[in-house]
Length: 269
Ligand code: SF4
Image 1 (cartoon, rainbow, N blue to C red):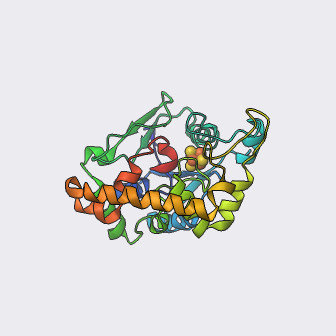
Image 2: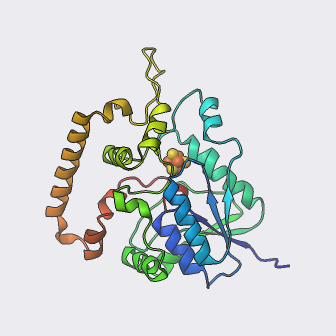
Image 3: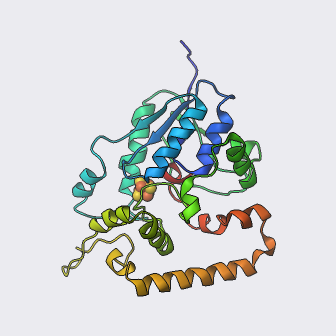
């Protein structure tokens, strides 16, 4: 039996961790691939993971906190998670990952790219050593896209309809335009997200995914129109500033959107 460290790569369903899994497949054959499943991901993410699994020729171990999102939602008195109160990441992603790791020495592979200066919310257990192969090997966004295309797996499906990140369908890191796109593409998921919200006259008892904009308001056609108009204006401004961008960034249109919310590496890489 090997006495060396375990090698673990946590997939999120996002492009960078997927590309890293593909990249590492033949380099570290003893790699353990895991996915921390909140059971609230998009259906297409589960399908994408199945395809990755087939390519890797190895099981992606699904880790989950047996209690689940709804349990913790109750424990937190109906408070929805938010950027400054990320109990979902803590209990549904990091905790199952750390339990799986246990006290073994582990090398954890993180898909931060060479063209990113990204820090985030990852496990800091002392027995976990994190490594960044894309940084070490100078693989940037175009390199990641090439790895995904060459493997036949391709980019994550949610990018096609304009969502920028993997993760739960109700993730609070979504921008208003992404909520609109969720409504248009996955109305049932939007309904379920809306059902978690609570509007109350009592102070401190209103819980919404976006502060000050409950989903029952956001979905009104006049608000959708405003959100789309505002998004188009931002896009247009960004198009005008395009001269400093690399072609690949322009083509994929994912750069400036993904630059904005960089907090949950385990959910969104
Ligand atoms: S994807 Fe978003 S909602 Fe889901 S666990 Fe991560 S931060 Fe929380």
